[in-house]
Image (cartoon, rainbow, N blue to C red):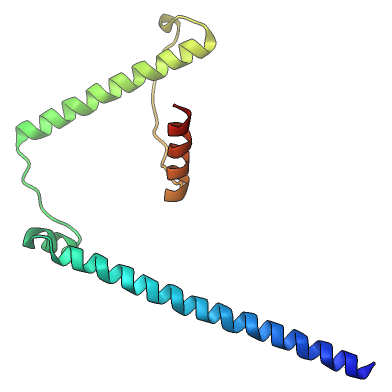
Length: 131
């Protein structure tokens, strides 16, 4: 009886030790692959021009924006927002089976998109598969 207990303890220790060593090896393999992939990304960043290199190192860059460019972008944003409000109004009217004249959209608040990249990609693939 005591021999069976000792043998089972040895098997447990051997199994847990093997799993522990395999997990540590897996950690090192993942770190090694990460270094290889980051090295290839650093090489591609070094191949970019000197202006891009300054932006990447400082984390920010100054832009020269002319007043006409600014006003054009503001006009484009307001046009897009008005179009978005029109689409939202039409969707609400269609779902409620009412006329768009009966519905007034007072404000539109954008919510942050906190989904992970894999979630967004999967959702886009599902939508594309249904089209």
